[in-house]
Image 1: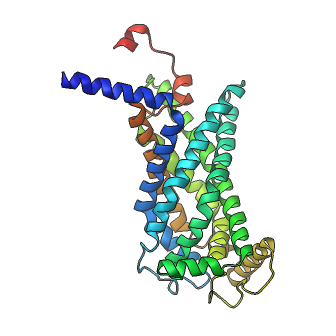
Image 2: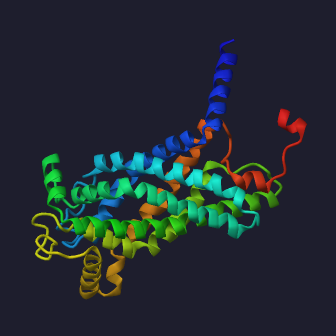
Image 3: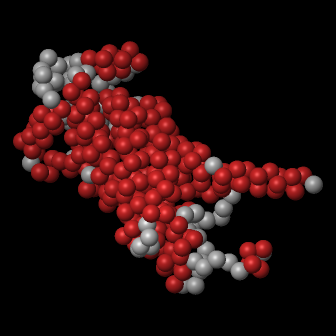
Amino acid sequence: MMRRDDRQAASDWAGWCQANPNIVSLAAGAFAGTASETLLFPLDCLKTRLQSRGGFHQSGGFRGVYKGVGTAIVAAAPASAIFFSTYETAKRSLAPLDHSNSVLGFCSIGLISSILGEMAAGVYRVPMDLVKQRQQAGQVQGLRDIAMGVRSTHGSVFFASYMASFMRDIMHSSLQFPMYEYLKLLVARWKRSSGSCEGLQTWQAATCGSVAGVISAVMTTPLDLLRTRLNLRGNLGDDAKGAQGRNLSACSLLYEEMNDVHARNGFRGFFAGVSCRAAWMGLGGFIFLGSFEFAKQHLLGTRFVTGPIVESDCPPLAAGQAAA
């Protein structure tokens, strides 16, 4: 009797989740963001130190690679929840407008949805990332230092960092998520051609996310470098060329950073930390998107990754099969 009650409760819960997809996206996104940030934070910290103006060793080297992890977790859960709830809602809203039923239309929906998701999440993520990266580079220690550092930062530095972050995040998502959806589509079609109409396993979707993450990470490293350098400047005692006391616009700050990077290291200087970023985003794509799909599966009570790929690529089950 107890087992029957448990099954009924699980069925009711799955039904409630299916009736409230926005809540599922929020919860799954928060779980995915927290999991990926916690596990891969050291790579993110090393990448920040490699990209800093002061250099890797001056910014802390291999010491204290979990500095700022608390800020990262506080930022990751809400930002990821906002991103995925916006992303999934936009996908569901745009899907009926695609009458072509083509791969291009499918990937275009992923592109538009990812841009909208980044625009929504960036409002919260950008200031939190500024604090996190200053902790990673050893510029601030306690809450008092954080408050003083943020308060003393020139407004144009905030805005320039905001611009660089939005450009990076929108470009990254514009590359990663259409690739992610396309790779899932290829895997689903391959499974169908081999005679299987089962949906994608979580690890298969996560692998697609990992490949897409590495490619997009390498291509967006120059924008990530500019964002890091902007986040680490403008603090009291940061550097002689800081924005303190100078009326520089956000665009002027971006241009100044680009010139400084090129003058010091040439074109390859824009790819400082690319190995750490590629490893971080590759593993992060696997953990982040795998965790998202895993959480969705368990909340919805399904065995496989859900979405338009599975439903459109396989014929519906016969009545006898469905009953089984």
